[in-house]
Length: 211
Image 1 (spheres, rainbow, N blue to C red):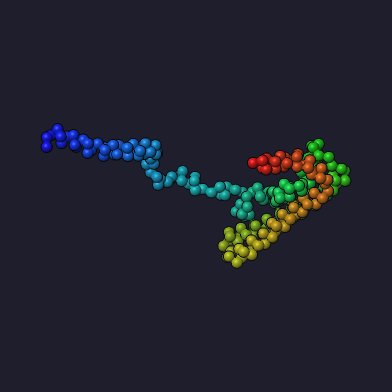
Image 2: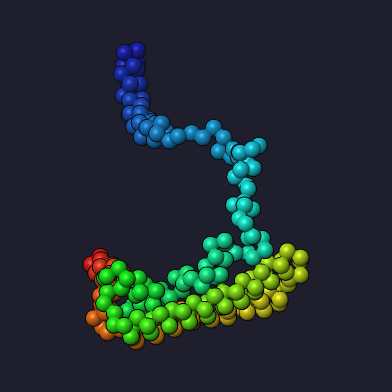
């Protein structure tokens, strides 16, 4: 066979293989170029940077070790605040006395004098009960933290004290929800509708249903 003939056949044989390799390279090369490379994927910070990342925010919270609670929760329990415990009532047509009084004081809601007096009594009674129950919860939470701090805790004791705390917290929620229930009974449907408008609940409900 002549040399020219051999060169022609060789070109015809290798050309398809070169085309296939070229297509494969073109498909892989851009993806590899776009993928960022991490020179040290297992790199972990060390020294001061590592200490900063490992340091717990709890360590800087005042009193957290003795109560096991965030300072904001301690303050709310001490003041008898709602802590969103009555949200199921508030958002469904059973206002609380404090926000009703605020709306009336701002001129956004009309209340009769006897309603104002009744709401004030409800609020004062709720606040006193909530503060007392909050102190019971704080004492129980402090007892729990103390047992952990001194290593005097096991699974049986843990279940017992958590059951006590659960009952106390349920009692606190009952105080708030019951007050909303009693407050709703003092109002007319028009007053409740106005309250929902002032608080923005009717708008929120329409927006949710419109999704």
